[in-house]
Length: 488
Ligand SMILES: Cc1cc2nc3c(=O)[nH]c(=O)nc-3n(C[C@H](O)[C@H](O)[C@H](O)COP(=O)(O)OP(=O)(O)OC[C@H]3O[C@@H](n4cnc5c(N)ncnc54)[C@H](O)[C@@H]3O)c2cc1C
Image (cartoon, rainbow, N blue to C red; front, side, top):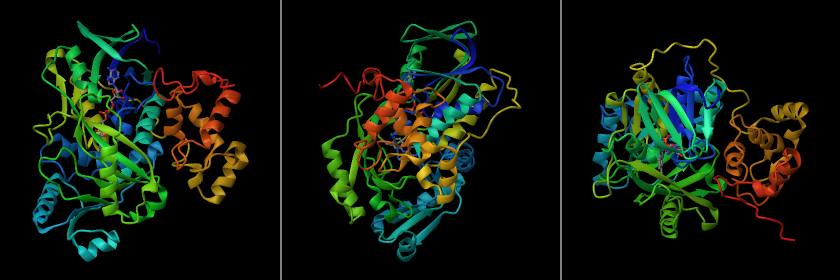
């Protein structure tokens, strides 16, 4: 399929939402394209969050956030099995520290039950202690359907699955102008290309208000709100058996600073919440890092400053300005006055959890414009195994090494990643060639040494076996060169 193709559906934005939509729609006989401004999928908010599969207790009954959260949560297990993505329903304790917070736990329970969240229980101290030894607090709401997933692996695998089912991914294509001529959208990208489609889906996350403005829709504004995190060494991972969140505080922009275990066994402390001026303000700050460390030490007394591996942040696509705070519901609409324009905006948390259900909602809206005919040859399963080579049993490892010797060579010592996994990442189906793309696919450069050991070995594989020139290596974006020439 080339750019001359007239698509049935074009999706702007290859985050978790755009990719979930692409995969869902790839079950039908449609020509689908995804336009993404970055050089890889999932480089926006979808790789910069807590990775929690929320249960649905936090949102008002009747809202899209509540409905799509609960439905999305119930779809995760099967989807992760098909996409070979690690996930686990490890449950969550929402903890009251003082009497004044107890009422909010009962309100949350009632709200969750109204939303259809299964298995909610109020737990006393001794019952909390059994689930999470050492947890502070006087009473807790337990939600067993809360889970964890690796958000970037999930986002990438949705895209790879869509790609296997015929969706075209156009990376490095920033949409800068849109025109509607009769029943066709003409979508122009920054490099002067024009893509045409019958249906246009805006899934541009923090930039979705800007896409709206390209079509003359002025009523929305996104206010980026930064959440900073610290990533801790795996040494502390075993401390956390379940997730622990504070009881809610009205008017706060997030769910409060909490500890989250990742599927790979690290702990995240965060996220903070602070409105920023630009959707590109990804710097982390010393001030917030100190606050996170202090709060983290209160929650995990064993925590040492040297346990912090690195910091990162994500930006919430909020529809409410700082003076208002709080939450507004997701916008998911078919703009009938611009027939064929499906607009998604303000998809902040629980957008990761809701993504599979958002995709179903979009499919329903699409049926107002196109007749959908199911394909018989849809491939639901991705090949390969779930997780990493290092997580397999001894027998499984030996079996793989006997078939493919590169499994026997360790490239990343911290995480035990093999040469074969690096090569698979280099040969990824979407053809992405940045170092971040290897990081997110093979988990190299993510361990304790952050690439000190594996980066030179990866560079060697890329140059010697794939003919790359070091001066062409990019970290993640155009212009983010790693090497500029020889020192000697
Ligand atoms: C701190 C934080 C913690 C969170 N924790 C959770 C959680 O634990 N659980 C949960 O369910 N949700 C969580 N969320 C919410 C979740 O991360 C988001 O709802 C979700 O990632 C949104 O996905 P998206 O695809 O809409 O946006 P994005 O991932 O931002 O994708 C939008 C894409 O559009 C592209 N784009 C933008 N403009 C253009 C253009 N002009 N042309 C082409 N492409 C363009 C961008 O580059 C980007 O790749 C959290 C969010 C934050 C910020």
